[in-house]
Length: 484
Image (cartoon, rainbow, N blue to C red; front, side, top):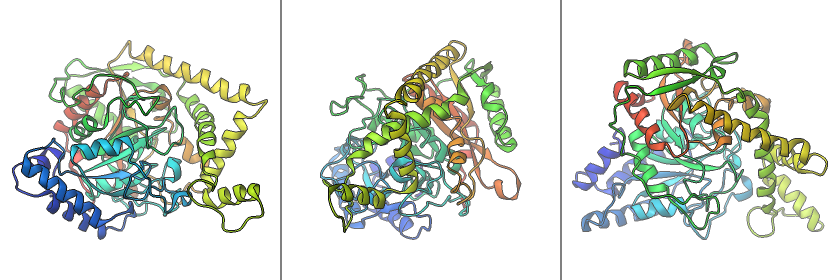
């Protein structure tokens, strides 16, 4: 059952070939025998209680397409019953009194929660090695990172521990782990998915999205999780749409922009070859490749690593040991409690970003750093708009290399930051982007590590992106391959 798509599983549930309880128990058994460290909290009793409720809905005919479908949630969305840790010691035992809007929407659809997924602490990282609960392992190669910060989500889908998962993308944290684990993930347009109940990292960048086996699966998940939320001041008020509506549309004549900046120095040859082969496949389907330029691409790293830490510094000030979360056991006074609590509660990467953010926001540096970064952010968005006058979608690699070995970059945070070079600009511009599997690296080690193709669209073009991805997945079988 674990190899089936959401469409197949939904049909089986609706026709009573399998019950929601049987399906949930099947996935729970796989999770319990897994060695990937993909989950932070699993509660069999809670899951089976939800499955029983889904079976009752199925018996009554009160269903949606996702009723009874098991799903796992990145541990950055707060949940009423499962722990919500954000991968941090600071929230190690925290249980939220309410559900995030995304969780509520999936509950309303009748999905069954399998548990919470491991992630980089407060979603800060590119390899999922920053979690207080230990790193997640890549199911294709246990010595490799799964990507971050949604590494638990991508690894769980790749290993078929869940048929669907939620993730969040601040600078590439859905697309990069999806690429490293050989699965499909999409970051929708900023504001499409409610951030209410999503533990904040960088509020102007954080965006929830789905990770699954296929583009079609992702369209079903997006149908459930998008929509206006009055509790989120950044939520965009738009009519509800069916993201699967264009899945069988012919892409003949589609103009694919290929940014020359995505294929320069630093891109591994095996990654380039896999991506070029995917572009050739699109040409066979009738698409047209257009040479374009995104000249501010290299500036996206310094811009992102000014804006994101600045917002993180502000957002994480709430974790002070007073209201909830970790508190130091011994302290002399209030200031000492703040200092010891935050020193003990945060990991090294989180501290690094808080310090960076406090610095760029401080008097005398705000204008020189933060304000200038925001101006360049606007120029990056303008580059994309100029490009979309020449093409319909943009394609290129998700990351410069395949997944690296666990521990390889732990002593060099800048090397981790450079891995996001092709995803950051999309997030800074607030555009939708996705990753689909398009091959593997080369050589004895890289040959079993997946490569992802990135597809970027204009604002609210998710249905188009999903169709473009779906057409490729109808012509190829990379998305069907599973780790041993």
